[in-house]
Length: 255
Image 1: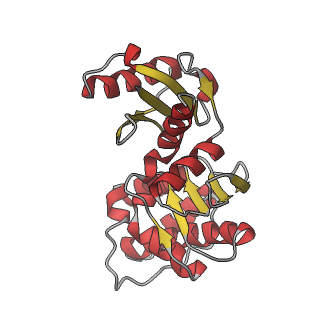
Image 2: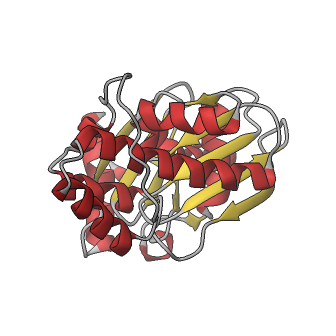
C-alpha cells in the first residue's frame, strides 16, 4: 500500500507518495484556499501514478497549514517530519538546517533520527526564502541567478538583515554603481552567516544536512559551510524533506 505526506508551507505545498521503495513528489504554490489547494496537490500526485485516494492507506500533514488539511488522518510538526525526511535521505544525519519560506529551523537528532533539540528563528523573515525572493525581485534576478554567481565575484557586505532596511541598502548600492552579482553574493553571505550562527548554537561538530527550497542554491550551501568550517550536505530533493518525512511517518502506521 501507498502512504502520502503533505507539507503545507507558507509559499508552496509539497507532497510525497511512498510505495515502500521509492518516492514520487509534487509541489505547487500554496495560494489562499489551503484546503482546496492541498486537495489539488495530492490529486495531481495521484494522477501521475494512475492512483486514486483509495489506494493510499494513510496520509500525514505537516507545515504551518497542517491543521487545515481536512483529508489527512494525522498532523505532525514540521520539526519531526524534517528530521525523519533528512535522516532518510542522508544516512547518519545528526543536524538539519531547514530554511523555509518564513522561518529557519535547526534540528539535532540521534543516530536513529529521533529529535533531541531544535531552534527556530524569531518571527522576523530575515534570512528566509521569502527574504531571498524579495531581494531577487529588487535586483531583477531569478532565484536561479542567485545560484549561478561566478566564483571570482567579490562579496559586497550587506549590513542589515531586516527586509525593509536591506531593500534600502540594496537600492543605495545599485545607485552607487555596485554590480548586481556582488550585491547578490553579499545577500547570500548575510543569510549564510545568520544560518551558521543558529547551527553553532545547537551543534558544534559534524556535517549539516540542509533542507528547504534555498538548499537548491549551491552558492548558499557553500557559504554556510565556509562559516561553519564543516560540510553542508544537500539531499537530492531538499525542498520535499518535510513531505517525505510525513509519508514515512504515515508508513509506520502500517506496521
